[in-house]
Length: 384
Image (cartoon, rainbow, N blue to C red; front, side, top):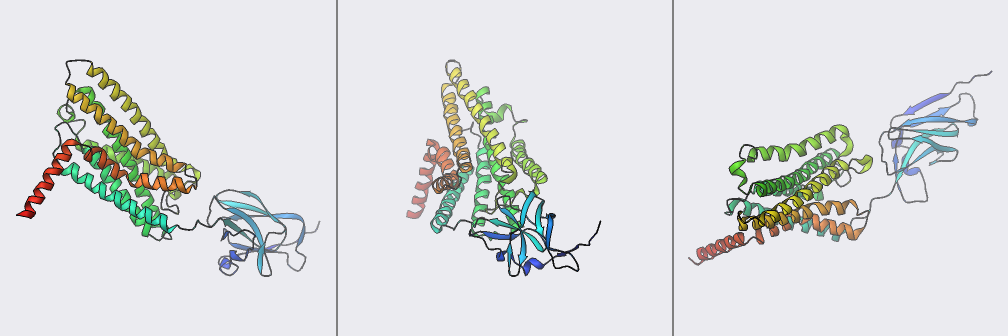
C-alpha cells in the first residue's frame, strides 16, 4: 500500500481578493462568502483529479436560512461548481464533496431585497406621524379631563404610553441605517417589549372592567390593596419584560431583522405572536363573561341600571380596542409579500392612536362637553 501527503492551507482574508462576486450564475442574486478560503494539494504532482471524492467541512462565518449554498472552487479567474456538491448543511457548518483538489470556498446566494417604494415610505411616514398626534391627544385627554368617579384610566394611559414610544421608535427606524446591526437589534428588543406591554395593559383593562361588573362598585374602593396603580404598573411592564428577557436568553440573535424587528426564522416570531394570541383569547373570554354578567344583572331590579348599561358600553369599547390592537398584527402575519395587505397592515397598525382617541375620547359625551368648554375659554381669552 502506497501513501501520499496532502497539504491543506486556510487563508483568513483571501475572500477579499477572490470575491464571491466572481461566482457567475444565470440568476441575479447576491453572493456572500460563507467560509474561509482553503486549498488542498498533493505535493510533487500536477494531477488534481481523484478516483474517489474528498469531503471538506466548512464552518460558517455567517448564515442566512433563506439563501442557497454552493460548494465552489477557483478556476483561473472565477468560482465554479463543476465536480463539487453539498452533502450536508445546518446553521453551523456545511460538508462539501469534490472529485478534485483545488482552492475551495462556500458561497451563499440570496435574492436581492425588493426595491423601495417612495410612495409607500411616504405613506408610512405620514400615517405614523398622524397616529402619534392622536396618541398624544388621547394621553392629554386621559390625564387632564375630569372623568366619572368609577372610571379607571390607568390601563388606557399606559397603553398609550407603550404604543406611543413604540411608534416613535418606528420613526427612528425609518431614518436609521440598517447596517448598524447592534443598534437595530436593541431597537427590535425595545419594540418587542413595548408592543407586548401594550397588549398586557389591554388585558389588565379587561380584568378591571370584569371586576367592576362583578362587584357593581368602584374598583379602587374595595380592591385598593390588590389593584393599586403601583401593582398594576409592576404587572403591566414586568410580564412583558420577562418574556423579552427569556426570548433574548434563548436566542440572542433573534432580534435585528432587516426591518429592525424580530427575525422570522427558527420560529422566534412566536415569542411575540404567542403571548399576543393568548391575551386576545383571554380578552375574548372576559368579554363574553362581562356581557353575560351585565345581562343577568339588568334583569335584577335591585342593581343600578344606568351603571350596568355604562359597563356594558365600556365592555364593547374594550372589545373594539382588542380588535383594533390585535387584528393588524394577525393580518401582518399573513401578508406574505402582498403589497395590498402590507398597505392595509401599515394603515391599521399606525392608526391605533387614532382609534383609541375616537373610541374613548371623541365618542364620549362627557369628554366632548369638556372639549367645548375648553375651546370656549380659548375663544374668550382671545377676545379679551
